[in-house]
Image (cartoon, rainbow, N blue to C red):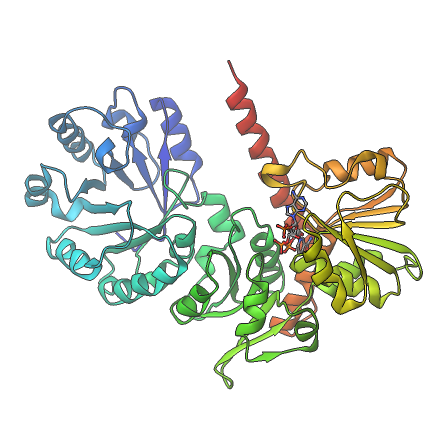
Length: 496
Ligand code: NAP
């Protein structure tokens, strides 16, 4: 069999559904048929009429799956799958029948080992031991809790993967890079689906991350932040790279510690990144060359690696990005209130003072409002925002998104100015914006700023004009998909 690159994992509650899902994964090279979702699995039925090679897996509870029957029954099912012509069956290292099946069918076995706790100290030894069994493929999946674990995986995967028999996976959000850059980690294929933490659906791997086009020469970028799984920046930048035929890929790089970016840079081949909360100040301080925007804001939202300096260069595109949607709006002498005193607020305050608005910063901790305001000679004060106090109001807090999606940082009674600009783009229409419109204010949502600051990042990295319309369209589409998934989840939860 030729080397495969994408294995779509399919799990369903009935054989009909499993077969439907199996055939729907028509762009995968092979499918993993998970029997452990079925009440009474029949491998011959699951495999019958398939149009691509299959790995049959019946994962027991004790290895993170759903099968609760006896091990004898599991062994019988896997043998039945082999008898029905399955190209591979997945056998766990810890399965009691492992040696029995290896002795007879090694050339059709994916020998798997999962560690849901973390990256074990003896990863190399473990991989070596599994490969030494002679199994056709060896799959090792370990929970990656920090980006800083990725160099260990790459150092293990590259030499051991040279024989084309290894699949090495970092489970969890911090391990997503192992799924998008399989060759970096020595993997002969990558799994697509939603069966494991951090796994990406087939469509996203192929269309958003263009996994088939990613190779050793591909430049790697990413967005670094504490919670980037809902970031639409990967969709936006990858669409821009695709549109201009730039051989580059942009990954979500989730980390709570900025130091992990440096630790994993070389292993990932990271040439640049967007930086989001809470790492903008750390990124500014870690860079060896800052452009004036960074020095002014003491925050960087964009890094690129300089070989000559052997360090990061930084810039901040938030300020310009914030002002783009305000092009043509006369701000001079207007009373502008900025709600929030974090990294984004600083760019907003700078932008508004540059345009000669009279700025007041308000935060729930007034001392932070003061610290954000003073460098720009802005006024400051506590929350709530008093009625009659502003013409332009900018929300630079996360109140209105995520777990706080229903909330608004400003009382309705205080929505008596002219223009409300909410930096939040997820959701695109926040409670604040809806309520502001109800009170007759003009409104601007955060998506336009996201696109504008992203376009400047793209230009700084590639030296080419950004395809702004492509980026806006990709970001909006990804956002719509995520919001659709959210409402589907709510419907499922509320179903009787
Ligand atoms: P940050 O550095 O964490 O700052 C958040 C600020 O919001 C802090 O002042 C925080 O106050 C305040 N805050 C948090 N929850 C609050 C609440 N429930 N009520 C009142 N204040 C609250 O975050 P950031 O990087 O500045 O980002 C702020 C927002 O802007 C985020 O929603 C982010 O997604 C958005 N943003 C959008 C774009 C874009 O391109 N559209 C770009 C950058 C940022 P404490 O200090 O008291 O916690």
